Image 1 (cartoon, one colour):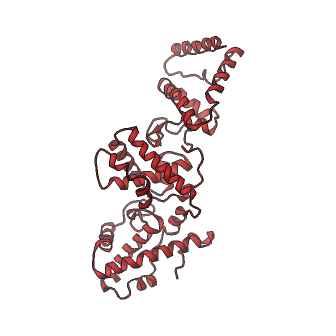
Image 2 (cartoon, helix red, strand yellow):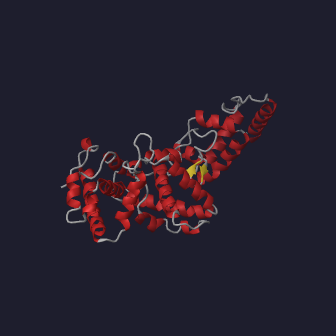
Image 3 (cartoon, helix red, strand yellow):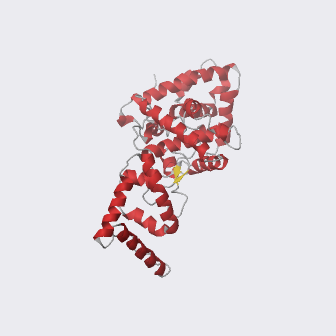
Length: 349
């Protein structure tokens, strides 16, 4: 049987060598014409796929896929697009660019290999925040940026962004660009963070720290019985700012300069960031909802945010202390409101 299969493979190779330039044919898609060769091929496939352990299956299949993709990229891409296969085999075949599928950066990006990289996930993409919380980062990923080539305070922010993207990919599949869209994250933000981490990561061994950290976060997220629907929160607060009556209470007894509309907008951005676990600069109050471009007073709002966060005067300090529980109350009101009213401004008592 093995001789029959070897003869069949030789025939295919001869055919490929003789074919005119530009003709790719479909000869590898059909089964071998003889029973002996076909039986040998099925036996080899059974031996290859018998062990369903995801890591071992990937270790066995991926080198074969890499060789096929290098020798016959167009033909192999066509096979992947047209041939039905199990999710586990699809996952094993998926070409990874560090933590993400290579799709989105290569010519034949959207074949079919966009399944989640995790075998089974019990949280959903809607339960992933736009940037992972500081606590998750400190517990599971703080060791990773310390290994990067170029130490920078900004590395932590890029790691937290990339981890959120990876958490979505693990449960929903898709490219990093797909994951960014799921998180309402501008494509440029995702690309910048991932490119920077790829450039600064010294090798695959270091990258495994990132993979292991995100896996630990996924496990913690799955074990949490009170997971938050962050996508719902982002929808609810897509056109929101602190109501004037709430603002009057928040600044009661504080400096009169805080009554300005620009300060209320800045405080609304900070509340949005806490409620959605998002990045302040991505707040709908700082980005045009249609274009994603910065609003005209982006820089002014940013200055007011910095003053609220870092000025040490009594009024700023007291307002910060009031905003934190207010944001928690707003978030709880959103989470507990009926789904039919999820897109309306939640009532806060």
